[in-house]
Length: 247
Length: 247
Ligand SMILES: [Zn+2]
Image 1 (cartoon, each protein chain N blue to C red):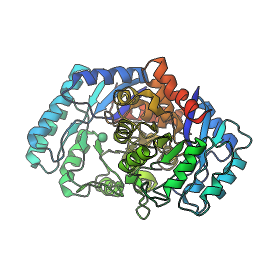
Image 2: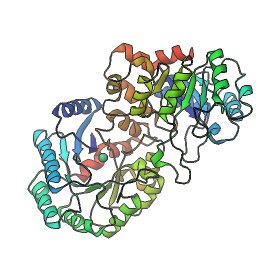
Image 3: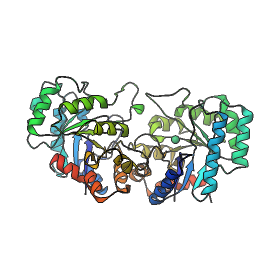
Image 4: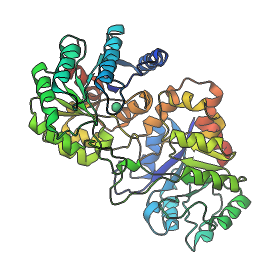
């Protein structure tokens, strides 16, 4: 079983989504987790719209799509809680997605993290160690470690293993509530093996970052890694199934 | 049959590789379905005289005829003419960004004249890694594709193969020249090859995996998963390389 934990389905192009479904079937991927499709600095209206699209995808193909609720922590707490209630408690979404609007060290994330602990849902948070091209408030793996330390009862999926690199793996090593997805950058060799040794395969989840990436290339890094079959199966789907509490 | 035009051998300070002999390298490539590979010394990227590394590589890969050496030449060094005297060279590689010269530098004129007279194709290593993930004290920007266009048009009789180009660069390079080819190692988008083929013709695209920097399987899966006709598949997998490098 293969579950892709990191996908961005284009909200307004059903034709492409059909192609994604087709490609995923050919690649043996059974479930795809949509993290939404939003602009930087999303307004409340844009957040609602992104989450509506994700919920629609899940309603349309509940056998394939899983979805996360995108939030901008700069919005008012009342709006954020309303959106969590609407999309997760009363809706069909199974986690929270945070991007670069707010750094992971910010206290604005605390109420969201507490809600996730209460609802027992994970947060998928963007992270990258950027030498060039860093955007305002973008989080590094060290920032994610800070967040994980403040909220040990909330499960965090840190995005982009390759972008975290060895330094990033070490940052999160002693925080058992942090998982990492395999997406990010080109399929540089050695990092999956390093992460399996440092974190254990049970903390690593396959993710493609489609539609900007390709299932083939992204699966290639997991199939190409020099790890045992059991660890590979954990990474490809077993871990995600457990984390998302899928049947 | 797949011919890989982008492989390297040696040591690199930022990654550890488990292919530490020519036999292991050939085995790795073979197990991914690659029958022949053009290979360069990665020691020659940073060691001040790449010709020393070229000689070492030739010695190392002697027992593996499926690996074809591509010498790295720095035309800015006083010994570059001597380094080109070896017979039977299939291609020559330059690494302008690491060797600190520009493609519009006049020092390239005599170099390109000799290359044309010997009918040897030129490989340009555009980058080794993702600039965003480089060690912060060793930032090496990728080669500027605009300079490559100018350069390739000025020396249009010599075929140029640009390695590790991004998709947008590949499209510009191929559309704005008649002699530039690209490898697929860094090109990625949803349905990588079918998407790429909508912008550039198959006879300008070559299979390259950038092994061992990248997981070999990623490039192989990009190629094998692509739904395309037999002719473009064969062109990309091996026919273009066979024609260009006379393999
Ligand atoms: Zn993403």
